[in-house]
Amino acid sequence: MNKYTLIALSATGGILSGLAWSSWFPGIILLAAFVPYFLIENHLYLNPQKYSLNAFFTFLLPGFVIFNIITLGWVRAANIPAAICVTAELSFLMSFVLWLAHTVRVRAGNLAGFTALVSFWMAFEYLSLHSVYLSPWVNLGNGLSKEIPLIQWYEATGVAGGTLWILLSNIFLAIFIVNSTDRSRFNRLHLMIWLSIIIVPSVISLLRYYTVDQSESGENEVVIIQPNIDPFTEKYVIPFEEQLSTVVDMAGQTVTDRTDWVLTPETTVDDPVNEGDLGNNKYISTLRKLACEYPGINIISGFVSCRIYSGETRAPTASARKIDASGSYYDHFNSAFKIDTGKQVGIYHKSKLVPGIEMQFSAGFGKLIDRILPELGGTKWGYGVQEKRTCFEHSSDGRIAAPIICYESVFGNYVADYVREGAEALFIITNDGWWKNTNGYKHHLNYASLRAIETRRPVARCANTGVSCIIDIRGKRVQETKWWTKTVLKGKINFETIITPYVRYGDYLFKVSMIISIFMLLYVFIVQPVRKKISVSGSK
Image (cartoon, rainbow, N blue to C red; front, side, top):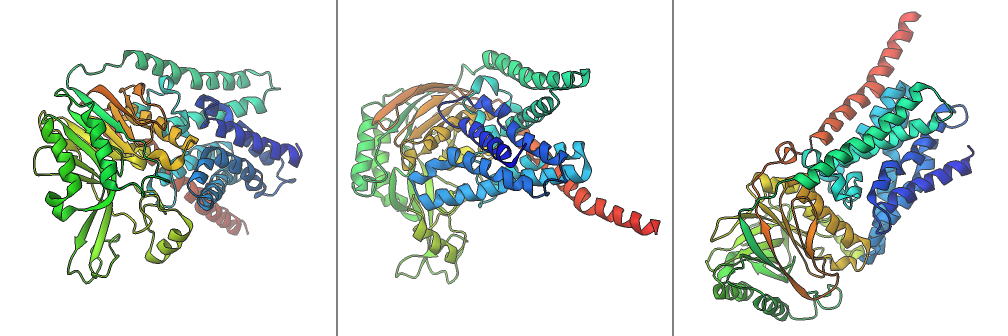
């Protein structure tokens, strides 16, 4: 292979893997999409005299740039500099991770190298779930979110199982291709292993898909309001009272005495509500009036809320800021409120915030971010968070639902925390209109199905501009609205109490990968060189 062939292979890997997130190809293509990258790696490994150790990184980078442009190019709809930054960051890190695994293979051999490839990549994905500077949006397991019948075993492994499946499939397929001229029984074994990796999990999943038991008790009627308010041209032009009035009118035309829940989108009201004076708030009163007309309903609505710390001389929280001449510190939150006929209002604060948009890394850096990113619901002051998940209990029948706000639905173990707190259904409220008609809102919609499978909880999803839907515990969308339409969706969900292995054990595969990665790095880059040095010294 010459360098042009290697670059072509890199581009092919980027295109194939990127297409898994598109609407044109099935996500199952990921089971072979990384093979071009691994063919490059093997060629460089077998020709160390021709290529430097760093050459692999150089050849990988164009492919991962293409991959991230295809999968995350939709970010440009909100802000072009943000799209450039996230593409550059992830392309560099993904290339670095595979380069590091290649280095381990060069130093320690095939078994260590392949083990490092899997463990390092999965460790990287684990870090993306827990670092504010990264995002798990394009973790490989997410790329299978369109293949619901084939990934029912996510209830045991979570998205990490999908990533592991993809990596193992690509490794064994690449090994078979590299040795394709070898007619020995040993290479046929590689083919059989690869076919087994593909077929066995798929068959198990299909059996589970058609046999999973769904609860026949605890049925609740849900009304989902999709007001379709354009966040770019209407959200901050039309008075918030008028926007809320539209939502209430839409609900009033659909709600009946049999309705249990009404869902409205994230930031239905973007005029900060003082949490210390909810009883006198006009928006709360409007929704409570609706609840009083239908005493059986509980309303889950998205608000921006604030907490005022009067008399504090120092910021009481990391997110608190002075924003006016009063001198008081304020915390603002992207919140979900539960409103019924009672005086108490349930409040949950969104706690997985979009980096650079809803959070400020520091006061100084936050000011810089304000200049280059749009105010997508939070850069003006940044949002605060809360430590634990809060579930909402229905005031009449005691059914418990998880209020999940937008970006939070991308994090599997985070959503599982709600179930550990007793949630029997998942309610997602979001505003995907910021991303316009791009793949961004489609990805976000598909990821909701993953949460249903992992937790075996029904999902009611309320999106300002769509797509709103009801998802069963298999991850199948049983009812849904159209994109960018003003409409109301009414349906029924059965609350569930089963605890899946994933809910019980969380991201154990990612954690094991982290442990293996740490030991691998210590052994290859510290223990092995020290041993070699001691061996050389002893031979003198």
